[in-house]
Image (tube, rainbow, N blue to C red; front, side):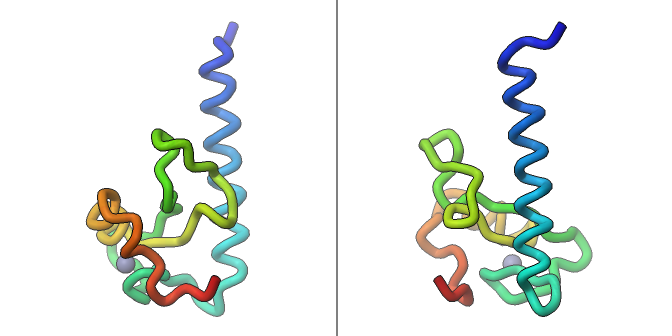
Length: 87
Ligand SMILES: [Zn+2]
């Protein structure tokens, strides 16, 4: 039996996977919207502009594709994210 928290976690992860795929499909080529790099060699990830812990949602308006380096670097400075992104 799964707890409601475990179920919510599984749903959140599925939503992130789906959103990451959607955002990547919108790009001409897969890249980090903050530094424009391809994310090599660590890869690209889904970043939350406003962290989930601060009430942010896993949605297109609150998420962007970033390389792991930018993801870690800007975790504490969300206002610097997505410089190259057109809103
Ligand atoms: Zn980057």
